[in-house]
Each structure stands twice: as C-alpha cells, then as structure tokens.
Picture 1 (cartoon, rainbow, N blue to C red):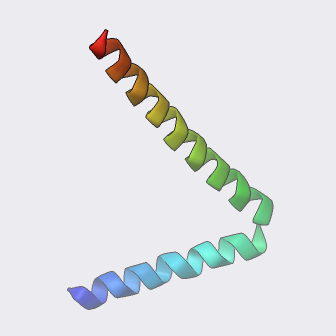
Picture 2 (picture 1 turned 30 degrees about the vertical axis):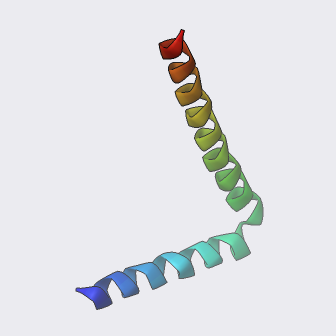
Length: 54
C-alpha cells in the first residue's frame, strides 16, 4: 500500500510540474486563488472568535 501512495504522489508532482511548464499564468492564478481562499478562511475564523469573545 505504501508504494501506491508513492506512485500517486509522483503522478501529482509530475502533473503539477507539467501544468506549471505548459501554462504558467494559469498555474499562478490557481495558486493565487488557493492563497486567497486560505486567507479568507483565516480571516473568517478570526472574526468568529472575536465575536464569540465579545
């Protein structure tokens, strides 16, 4: 089962590298969207705890 995880990880890495090489602008947009989503989620959690404390 461990080798299956390694193969899947290798496939994901190869696909990501291929995507970055063939479509760098689209890859940058995907990364920006992911960081934006994480930032928004963090901000929402902070707002929740601030509201909970007051």
